[in-house]
Image (cartoon, rainbow, N blue to C red):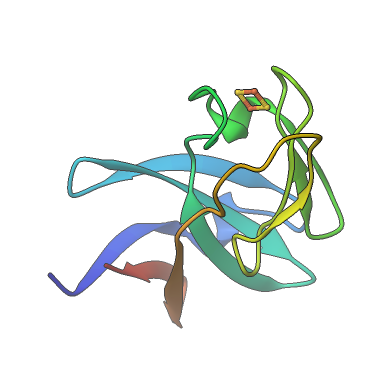
Length: 102
Ligand code: FES
């Protein structure tokens, strides 16, 4: 599909996360230490939006049952049951615009 604009850097401050829809998928875009990362927004446990959770460092914690995922890689970091990792996506920044490669 290619490179899709998801927002402006100026609207995504350090430590922020936001849900965007790209090609029918809900994607979580985070600003961690000034770098932008993208992964699926839908928790692989029961489908909560991870944008409703909390971001600490590079870890997002799901607001429903506490699963922790690494926003940089999409990898599951902590949960009592085996659930899938999130799909992660490349991001590209051009001037003030943030793009996700899908
Ligand atoms: S829906 Fe995310 S931990 Fe259960």
